[in-house]
Structure formats: C-alpha cells, structure tokens
Length: 147
Image (cartoon, rainbow, N blue to C red; front, side):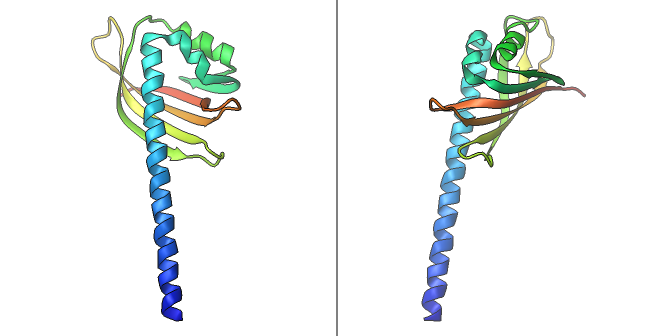
C-alpha cells in the first residue's frame, strides 16, 4: 500500500510538472506573439498602439509616468521621430499573479534615422485579460540603456 501511494504521488508530481511546463510554453508563445505585434505596430502604424491599452493603463517612459490610453497614445505618437525599427534580442515571459496575466520583459536595439548606432532599450509589459476578450497592456515601462 505504501508503494502504491508513492507511485501515485510521483504520478501526480509528474502531471503537475507537465501542466507547469505546458503553461510556461503557452506564456512564452503569447509573450513572443505580443512583442512581435507591438513592435510591428510601433514601427509601421504607431497610432494603432492605442488599441492595446485601456483607460487605466500606465506607461513609464524614461521615468515619465503617463496614465490612460489617450495620454499614452499621445506620448507614443509625438515622439521626436517618425520612423523606427526595433530589433528584439531577448524576450522573457512569466505568468503574473493576476489570473491570466503575463509579465513580458524585452531587450533589444532601436534603429532611428540619422543615428549612427542603434540605441539599446529594455521594456516591460504587464498584460492582463481585457473584459472584451484578449489581453491589454496594464503596465508598460520603457528605458534606453546607456553605457
């Protein structure tokens, strides 16, 4: 009886590991898809980024705190460059404590016209389920990396 219980516990443990592994894989897939979508919009149709935010979304951009979809959209659409190209180096995604939420951390290079060298950047997104379905950006933090 003791061996049967031990085997059952190992089976449950293995099943949990499989569930965790599958969840991590899904989180990575969603995080990667979001990042590709976000930077494609940023580089090609920046005004459409507004659709990814909600009225209570927050953006920290180089230390400036911005709240609300309208102000975030205004900030992003009025950056001092019209064209850009983001090249992502790394994407790390984790499930957040908010049910169905995902935290995504990105590092990469930002190419701007007139710049001799790309600018290194880091960005963090906290994605949470939207009431109408899908995910939206609750928190967005962006920093250029100098040095």
